[in-house]
Every structure is written in structure tokens, then in C-alpha cells.
Image (cartoon, helix red, strand yellow):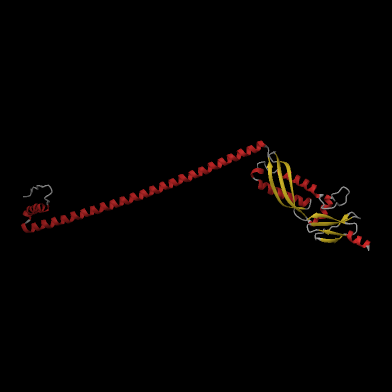
Length: 299
């Protein structure tokens, strides 16, 4: 009975909610191909054990010295999250080993893959850094981080069966002289930008003033044309009125002359007409005006 209890207790192993495991056969020093991904108690057999791996997202951060495309040495701070591939835990164990000096699995999580992870990640990031000039780490950090994530994802998935989930490029420490040069360049860029904006504002202001002057000139021309048209129309009306008055007056003189010619004959018609004009002038003359002496040369 005691043997059965000992057998059962030594043959059952527990897998927690946050664990994955692979079965390790102590007798043959071999592992099962299929991982255990469900929590609970599992039969492993007497003397056998489980190699545990975390099934949650892991976080790691490295401070690396890299060299850029233009030959500058930089200190970069990289932080990324990753997760092990459950289906390939046996391959990861074969690649990294049990993580103990005696060759047998140690209690707790198997972390034998972590030195390999750092080694591969360091090499990949160091190579990718040579694709960028130094100022990209200061002015275009997002693009650098995206390239790092893509390269690291491909390398760790292919070599260590690890999925990279996120990557952040933190602070990049550059040589002091280069940092000061970048700051000066940034200040000059800002000054140029401000000057360009001021120039654009001046151009807009001048263009606005030009448009206002053009509108004012156009309005002045239209006003002048209107006034000229009005004066021309007024003058034309006065001329027409004057011509009409002269015509009517001439027609009246003609009728008067014809009247005198019919009454007195053609010889005395002019003398009678001029006498009529003398009387007419005296009747039309205003007493407040100068007296005008008219001489009848036709009498």
C-alpha cells in the first residue's frame, strides 16, 4: 500500500496555469515530442519529471554598444517582449539543454535559452545598426525600431523558436561632440524653418496688398468710367436741347419772315421783321440787366 502511494505521488506532476512543460524520461534521458500545455496533474511515470517553461509574455532589456553606418559608436538601450513557441519547446530544449551542470533538469523554470537569446539578439541588433547613420537614432527613432523588430522577429523565430511581440528603442547615448553637433544642426533647422515661415507670411501679406491695390484701381477705373459716361450723357443732352431750341427758334424766325413777306411784300419784309425783332428784344429785356442798343441797318 505504501509502495502504491509512493509510486503514485512520484509519478504525478503538476502543471500550473502559467506553465508549459515537456516530459523528461530519467531512464532514457529523452524528452517527449509533444509539450504539455494544459494545467493540472499529469502522469509522467516513476522517476520522470517535467521541464517547465513560462507560457506568459516575457520582458527583457539590453544595453548594447553598436556601430552605425557612418562609423560612430553608440550606446543603445533596447527593450522587447517575447513569448516561447509551445509547439517547439522540445526543439528549444534540444538546442539550449537542461540548464544545469549535471545534465539533468533543475527545479523551477528552464532558463537555459536566455544566454542564447541574448547572444542572438545582440548579434542581430549590432548588424542592423550598421544600416543607419548615427543621426537616425536621434531624428528617426521609430524607423530604426521598426527595422530592429522585424529583423529580431525573423532571427529569433528561426533560430530559437521565440516570437517577438513588441520592441522599443529607448535612449541612445552618443559621443558628446556629436550630440552637440546634432543640437546645433537642429537649431539651424529650426531657424531655417522659422525664416521660411516668415518669408511665406511676407509673401502672403504682399500678395494681399497687391490684390487690394488691384481691386482699388479697378474700382477707381469703374467709378471714373461711370462719371465720364454721366458727364458725356449730360453734355449730349444739353447739346441736343440747345440744337432743338435753336431749330425751334429758327423755325419761328422763318415763319415770322414769311408772315411779313406775305403782308408787306418781299422788299419791306426784312425791314418789318427787324422792327419786330427790336420790339421783341425790348419786351424780353430785364430792367435789372444792362441796356443793349441795337442798330437796324436794314431800314
